[in-house]
Length: 142
Ligand SMILES: [Cu+2]
Image 1 (cartoon, rainbow, N blue to C red):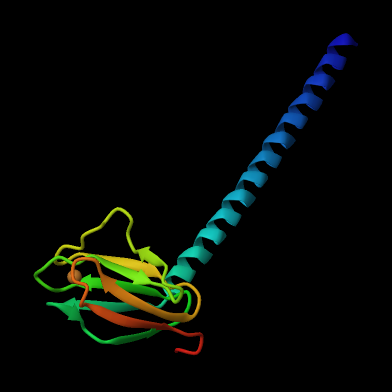
Image 2 (image 1 turned 90 degrees about the vertical axis):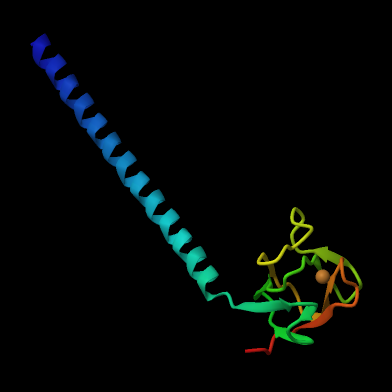
């Protein structure tokens, strides 16, 4: 009689452990699924982001004016054979260094900057104060 009782307890315990493992596996797969969906959304968002290439040709920007939208990315590519150090001046004259670590943009190097709110910004170079271009940020640009 005592043997059957122990066997019954063993069975219940075994059943409970099985259920617990099953619950853990289901929970883990839900977490993994949710994480991969979030990752996919982020990758998709990044792929949808418009990237505007701004070339630095020898001693100036390629164009005087660049029109972009908030959330876009500008990529400043130094295609000249001299170094530049481009920064951005906001409408209230605040200075933004695009890359805090990369002060000098040597030939061939490019830097990226995510465009914030609307406004008339200016691209300037620390090394060559004569170099500048307007960066017009507006919602309606396609
Ligand atoms: Cu320069």
